[in-house]
Structures are given as C-alpha cells and as structure tokens.
Image (cartoon, rainbow, N blue to C red):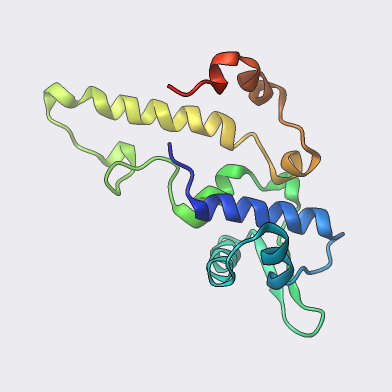
Length: 152
C-alpha cells in the first residue's frame, strides 16, 4: 500500500484542527502554515473532507474549518476514503468486482485479504487517537515487532 500525499496531508490537517482548537474554526492558512501544506492542495483536500462530512466550513472573519463530528468518530479509513477512494482497488475496481480467469482467481482473494488487513488498522485508529499520540492496543502491538520497522 502506498499512502498518498493527499491522505497524509488530510490526516495532518485534521490533527491540527483538533489540537489548535476547542471547536472553533481554524483557517486554511493556519492549517497550511502549521503543517507546510500547499494552499491549493489543501483547499482541494478540505473540499473532499467536507463532501465526506468530516469537516464543515464557516464563512466570515472568524471563519475556517472545524469537525462535522467528534474526532473519536472519524477513522483514518474515513479520511483515506474521502480523499483517495477505496482502501484497495485493482486498476480502479473494488477487489470484489475484479473478474479473473480460473488460474488467476486466487488473486482476488489476495486483494480481499489485503483490504481486510488494512481495515483492521485504519478503521480502528481515530483522529482522536492520533491527537492523543496513542494507538489502540491491537494496532500498537503491530508496531512492537522489530520486523515491522524493517524495509523488505
């Protein structure tokens, strides 16, 4: 799996919204400055997050962006899906929609298993976990294995 810059920036912007404010809107300029996110790119990301009902915007002098729902109810998976689409796709199709011939049919099961594995992490970690700097135990355990840190 490759994490896109868009997903990384979206998560960083949401962490910033959660840490900078107690529900008051945060301007896109503040977010971009704090996390070094290019303005145009950030605007597109915020629009995606608004369409997914993760954030809402407020116009006016004290306007900006705030959460549409509590950060503990927003998962990393929600954010990735909002900005990049499905967690796993095979040339643009969801794994269950891919049709293989007999000899390659097992590949579909690999893609389904990969999606399930990603879900087990991304759906368990919320923006609130990230803000608090703690992961759910099952996810934290995955990082405790030294082999997890080794490139292969």
